[in-house]
Length: 194
Image 1 (cartoon, rainbow, N blue to C red):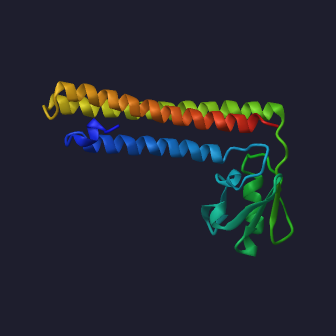
Image 2: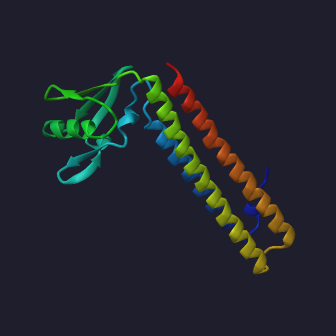
Image 3: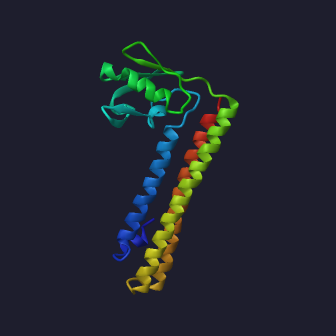
């Protein structure tokens, strides 16, 4: 379906901006889901962990190689041996519930199976993040509708164009909200599967 907004010079930037901002919101939600703990080990579980790298908080992926050689184990190999204790401490204090161990060269992070209660808490937490992102998308919709209304008020577009543009903004909003809900449902199923 061709976009009426994209073909209208007065609304072309509004359309591109809305689409871009909504995409960012969906991508941010996807990143949140990736770093969420499930019953299996994933390199993304440590995405939020920051290591004190010579006075700078640095993401773990920038100071070490993170891999999952087994379904219940994350292996972290720092680029510099001197960083092993700092990386271990960062993982231990990250509030992710991991108990890392190191042999001087690599850090082994066992991923314990999740309890039923922990799975439900995780889904509840994700539902909250989902609501935040749906609200963000709706706020982007409101901004878009305001810009369309302003263009109509400034006589840059006709009343029919305004109506079509508002419908298109709503369709875009519905599509993006559906995307985050589908991502959530898939992750919920993954988390609750034992």
